[in-house]
Image 1 (cartoon, rainbow, N blue to C red):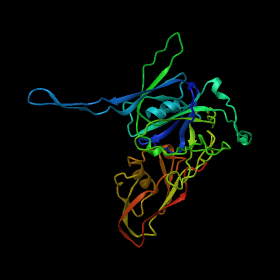
Image 2 (image 1 turned 45 degrees about the horizontal axis):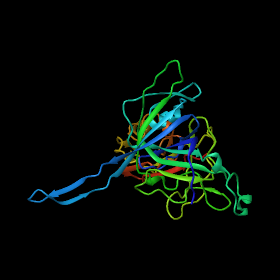
Image 3 (image 1 turned 30 degrees about the vertical axis):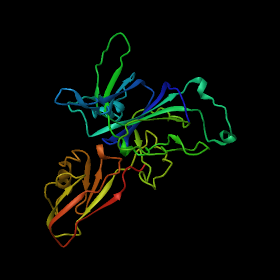
Image 4 (image 1 turned 135 degrees about the vertical axis):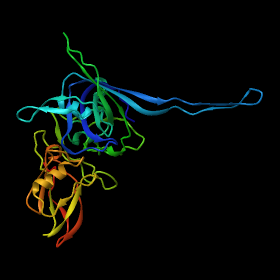
Length: 361
């Protein structure tokens, strides 16, 4: 049994996730920082219900109660540095960039995102007297890397994050983000190596996946925390990620300045002589009708009008077949295939294929 105190937060990693904790791979999906002051977690409970029934005489004949139940945790993260990537990741605020495209700030917005979140991992010390245990076997001699213990906390989803008051005066300003946790079932065993998988201290993913009702996991680990990295960094996922065939060791993550490939797809009508198509993406409503001989600019306009793409996030070239490249907010990431429906095509068949896989670093 591992018994350990928790002292001093040493490192914090934030990862972009969906509302159920599934990591979102892409060029700006993780941040590792030491620029934080504290993380506070407070359970939000559903109070117990008293059940009582009196008889005709007014005496209690039935008395019971339902137990209290945890609904979620309220999370408060206090920061001592402004990291535009981290703020944008939590709040979905627009990043402000400089002439070279580097993130230098952010602009706020009215809407608070609820359809996605951020996973937080925190490493702590365990106290000086608990750091150096007495070995009972020679396994430590062949272990890979350090075997010093750390406390490890993982919260797969913090969502509905808001920024608290900012006071600028004759003292250091701090920044507070608050949100609530949610089920982390899609975090699974996670995209990183955080736990020893054997007596040689081989670093691997969590040994057991998160369950649907779990919001937090705390454990003792001998796998050291990641190094601090500047700015937003790319994220790639283990594959297979879920299930019995999921791999035990996650791949090394790309360097923060690594540039990934843009997803490219081809829309081919097979030399159709008449007819039209509509396109959709990630379940969006269909686009406007696109003629079989439409110019690339018309196809691009139709795609940019989709709610799941947006202006500036695709470029289209060619004259049927059309080549679509995902750029901007959709660049450097793996993307699902466009969906298409043909109407009255003559002399051809609609096919959509991936020509360059996105998100390869």
